[in-house]
Length: 118
Image 1 (spheres, one colour):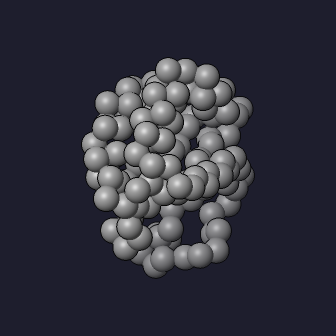
Image 2 (cartoon, rainbow, N blue to C red):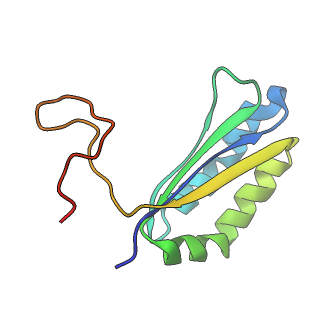
């Protein structure tokens, strides 16, 4: 079985055009969310860093991500955001081999992994 894949990163555009860039990207975000294997696809403004957009994606598996990266929605989003003065971009992918809730059964937030992986 293939593990889920996360993508987390930032994209910096012209600060005065960030909101316009996100608005222009909405159709591409919606189309991507409808793709098979897309669990989450969110581009959102960092309210403390002018021009910064945070990227968060969660894919069912590596194949779903590969299909997306070769498809029209990825290319359209990339080109749309770049047209608003792309200054920097940093995106990292993570393969997930263990996940669990932050809160344990008593409602206590935990940084350690406390469930049995078996």
